[in-house]
Image (tube, rainbow, N blue to C red; front, side):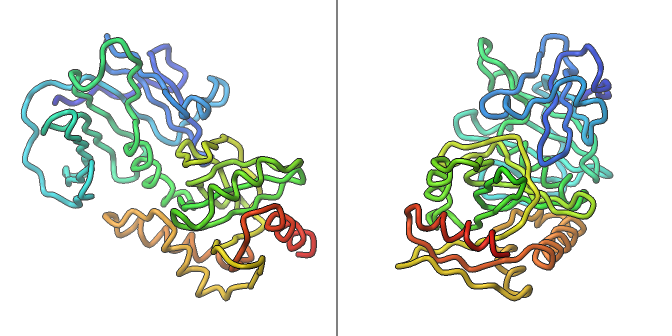
Length: 309
């Protein structure tokens, strides 16, 4: 695959799109004459208007690659699944491959060390000619976002986020099977509440407050909204015979948050920054153990706590 030209500015007439993810702006523009990048699936809900996308945090050029063999580079991290990470001098190179596309990578992403600029080279044969081409298909969109988040005071977590009409946000943290989708469905029936995400969320410090953001990466409840809310409470989920809430010490909350986070393990600086963000989160927002039963009484218990907090 060959290198791409520099990405045009966000206001350029070059084909492309811009996404808002976790309060960050990611601009994607074409570097090939016959490639018109487009957001697809739930990512379309996170697409920004030209007025909203004048100052991108990250600029990406998307190009068609060639069949030139990829260079041998030092392997930095092997996910054991779709992607591998290589050192490329001053830059990083993610190579994505999947059995349905053969042994060669279907996408190669080259990013600078801060994740603020890069290029995505796509293997033409891996993309149907009659369908829109989304250069940041999962997991590349998350890989890119994690690098940015670590350096922008943010972190991605397994969680269900709810925004109340008062502007408060509540985050329910848990692994698969611990009740995130169940609570998301219960909250969708509540007046005065909006479910921002049912599986993965972003938390970032914005000035004096921490905010929780919805993301495009949804689960069984199928909820993914581009809004955000001031984060007022963290709830670590457990199924139980009743609804009980127990305030956690900061050290325990940090450990639980780390277990539910998506840190960039391959990036020592980014990993430390992620840990710093988790510590800040645990010190700023009350964290509670929440054993609950899967009915409206669980919502009532949370509302009662929030009203008394």
